[in-house]
Amino acid sequence: MAGFQIRKPHSMDKAELREAAEGLAKQLEGTHGVRARWEGDSVRIKGAGVDGKLTLSDADVLVSVELGLMASAFKGPLRNEVQRFLDEYVS
Image (spheres, helix red, strand yellow):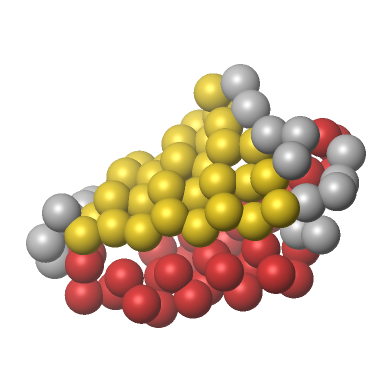
């Protein structure tokens, strides 16, 4: 399986951070047809060939994504989309 991880440090409070994470989850649901579900301080993202987790902590955000064979063709664009979103909304 192909995949990637992105770790982004932040200095935001939990409410702001959760709002940003919800925005990313909604964006991915809309553009990639995945489903998002909160589990404590993590949001689980699942779809056809995609299994991801965005975990919030006091110091950083960790995005871990595993892609199946067919979805691995979209690894670069998906990674870029997630990185761009984090750079724009997480500080």
